[in-house]
Image (tube, rainbow, N blue to C red):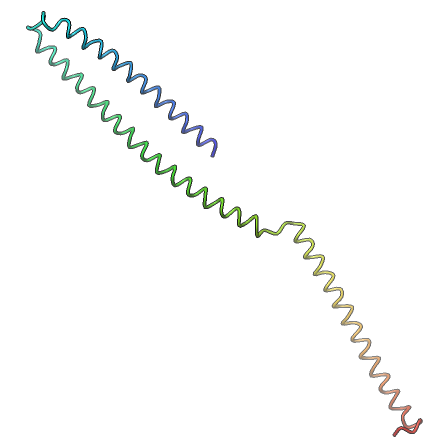
Length: 154
């Protein structure tokens, strides 16, 4: 993201340099206009050639205007891209926040696995004890049935 901003800043600096070049051109054109105005009275016969020079300068202005229009369009495109990028970043920021809030760490997973292992161990132990107690009750029941007639309970 920072690299993109650096690229954009570099592009803006390049555009600034281009604008300075255009300013220098305008300054030189302005100087030409001043020299033409001073000589205008004395050069009536060369009016047509001067008029042609104005037309060529106008063409330059038109081309410069077209360049400015294309630069404006580029800025509009870049503005739209910046908005899209910002929206995407905001969406990703929300997603990352949700992930951070809901994500289990390795320690969490280890604790869960350890707890499950302990529960499985307890279940096995209880199951074994129940099996043992059940068998013991059957033996004791059989023994009680044998003792009952001897004691006179039946």
